[in-house]
Every structure is written in structure tokens, then in C-alpha cells.
Length: 194
Length: 92
Image (cartoon, rainbow over all chains, first blue to last red; front, side):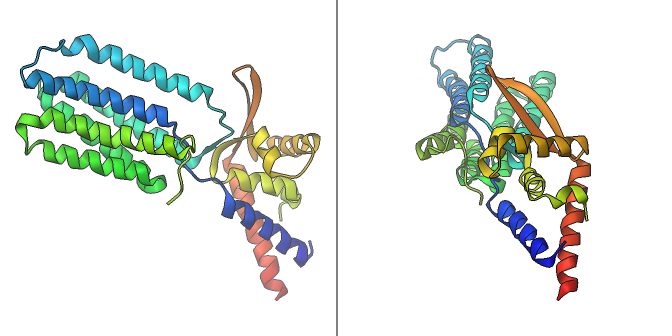
């Protein structure tokens, strides 16, 4: 191979890698759906703690979670995805690990070792950490949302009367907020690389 | 140098796959300036050599081919790029 050809090939590779899509593609609807799920569940807990008559946990929590899963799967299946970046893959791993670990603790330890309210705190702070990890690598709205969720979790313990309300606020700011920002940007969840 | 990667199209395909989990045939069509038949033939050679894996599926009713870079392909690409750089350095 001639040196000019070698140089041309290296420049071709450099050009492709320099402009390669390394962004996160996360559907805003998925973020908004899970944010609303967390917000509603914690807001209803707050209503109960405030003495209002609301249905028991079991009545609304499972149907809402099933609805959120159905919406997420539906949204994921209808998007015209032509490429999955390594960041997309990493984000999927992070959120599934957070969800899996928290669900395991929820099912095995809640009300035996872990009190009900502590579990709600773990869910909020766990997903806050997930958003931070994914967001720091790929998306400003997501890491800001994660920071807000962690801040709301930290603040909740200092306001016992509004503990669940603060967690609800965390879910709204952490997931619904970034979801709306990405939807308004019109990037269909494609976020800028930091 | 890797004989298979002396083709600019095949080199471009591997470079596109490097920062991705997978890329569809349609996505390669947008970024690599060649005919569908030619692109398909180049991808076929990379699959045959084990540099790239192919997954055929349906996205709704539309058939879709997804391509992933294998460990062999990644190693071959890195070695080939190093060889190109070495050639340029020795020519100075």
C-alpha cells in the first residue's frame, strides 16, 4: 500500500470516529411514564400520612407498575431505531440493575428488616444514582434530574411530615422533568454527548 | 496489514461499528457511499471472516439486518490501523 493511500484510509477512519453517534437514545415518554409512576405512588403515600382517605397500596401500585412497563415496551417497539450506541447499552444495564436489586430488596426485606418508608427512600435514591451514572456519561438533563432525586431523598429525612411528598417531588424532578426537556428539544430522546 | 480491511468500505463499516452496540444495514446505506449490492457483498465478507456478526429480524413488518463488531473484528481493526500508522511513520 502506498503511503498516500494509508493516509487517506486513516483520515477516513478518523472522520468516521470523530462524527460517530455516541449519544443516548432514550424515549422521553419512558422517562415521563416512570416519573409519573413514582410521583403518584409517593404522593398517595403522602396523602395517607396526611390523614386523607386513599386506596391501600396494593390497589394502585401493581396496576400502575404494569401500565408503566406496558407503555415502556410499546414505546421501545415503535421507535425507528437504526443504531444502538454503547451508551444506550450501558444505560439499559444500569437501569435494569438498579430496578432488579431494589425489587429484590423490596420483595425479600420490606417490612421484615427494611421499614416501608426506608424502602421508598431506597427506590428514590437508587434511581437517582442510576440517572447520575447514565447522565454524567451522556446527558445533562439526566444527571441534573439524578442530582435532584438524590437531593430530594436527602432532604426528605429532615422534613418527616412531608417525607413522602419530598420523594414524590424527587421523582417528578428526576424523571418527569428531564423527560419533558428531551421531548421539548424534539430530539426523540437523543441527547448530546457531554 | 489485514487484506480484508484494505477495502475502504469494509474499513468504514468496522469504524462505524466501533462505538456502537449494533448498526442496521439502512444506517450503513446513509453513511457509506456505495450501492446496496456492493455494501451487502462487503458486509458478507466481514461476516464470513468473523469480524462482524449478523442478526436478521423483523421490526414491525419490515425486515431488518443488524450488525455487531466481534472481538476478532475489533482486534483486526486495531492491528490494521496500527500497521497503517507504522507505514506512515516509517515513510517520514
